Length: 324
Ligand SMILES: [Zn+2]
Image 1 (cartoon, rainbow, N blue to C red):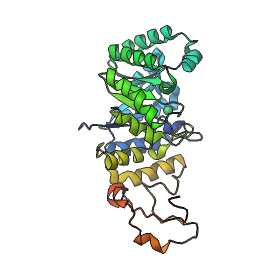
Image 2: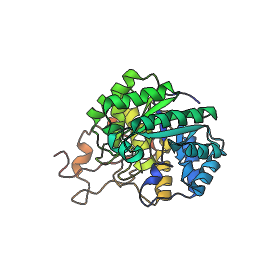
Image 3: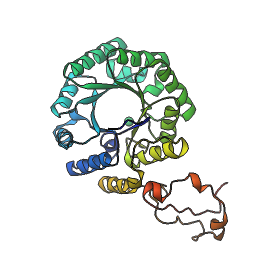
Image 4: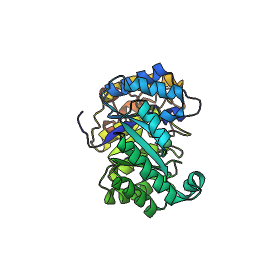
């Protein structure tokens, strides 16, 4: 598999399915994984093996497909979770560990040394069983920055191949994200991955800020599905990387519309009509018609997604209030 500067690690099948009211069938999961693989997504977070039999069966079915993309399972820092990942035939595991005081208080009774010892032991167990290990700092955005860096450095020293910065509760803005991620990138030799949430509508912007700071991997979901307000949308991140920064993530963007429709059907959750990657008809204006001036206004469309990039034509209408 060719390596690209920025890697997409799509978590539609894990965080995407954590969106309220969404549960994919095994067939739908296989279809989504196969499609993501076929358009060149380099890594898929396929679920939480320890969650139960049905989830494990779906993950096992995906591992048996023989896809090119790397498959990774999401785990808490405990041996039984890693064992469940092994039972699914996975070769990569993501281990999530709380790093903010609030989360450490809730999950480790405030005992951060116990948390670190557990992380080390679970990483060692995973390595002893031939797994590659990624570590994620749950609630990184609210963590003390020195402590977050220490945890990431320990993870690196214990052999993790990547560290995930998680804006778990979706509270960051792009500038703050940049500064926090920059500190990690400056001190780590392993890649940093972005995991952002859309509670304030900034998931994609924050993911991009992390990349500008030097992160090399992004967790995305198709249509931005995900817990609460969702995650950074695959189609937005890929197109923004391509159009704003000229960064190719190795994705066949012409098939994004088809992918978006597949996931919209499976999740029974249509994308908003104004979503640029798959709008197919002009949006109505407040007057119910296209202003005649539309075609004469030299809109800066050269930087907007077009049919040849995302698989569909995009037409924009102008509201009388546009630009105010
Ligand atoms: Zn998340």
